[in-house]
Length: 198
Image (cartoon, rainbow, N blue to C red):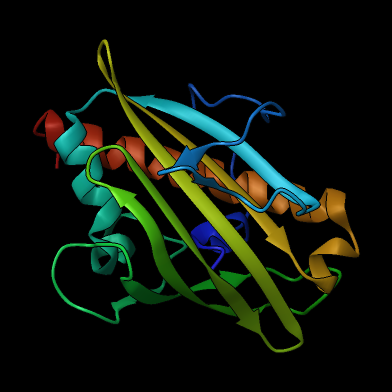
């Protein structure tokens, strides 16, 4: 799906985590040369530095079935294949969708397919997020870069579909909030594991 792409954006409100940046309007993130949807009206890019080893951050992000353990907005997560996450892997996950101009409060059902993956470096997935009366097509790109003191995680996601395009500012704010919440949860969990606070 949008992948969490889509999904991430629909996770709900949260304050921007420490270290998060404002939207980026330059060149899009890529993974193995592929990026987000260049024509999508709804997009957000943000990043955070996590004081933990790259292997810890990567394992948390790619162990999809454990997302509900550290991300409250992810209610369920199920791999549709086996083994380490790889190109072609698919997973289905759900998250609550708060009431909005397009739909009442409901649950968003997302099916994401990994299109590109470079271990320890980047991920890109696509897929639909659906609920009654709502469909969002998303593309989500993640980059992981070792930096002094840890890992910089940068993510960019786009959403398209009639419902989100009917109110681009609102849909963009929902996406921003979801992505920043995801990064904040990833940072908190990875740093707790790295520093023995789990």
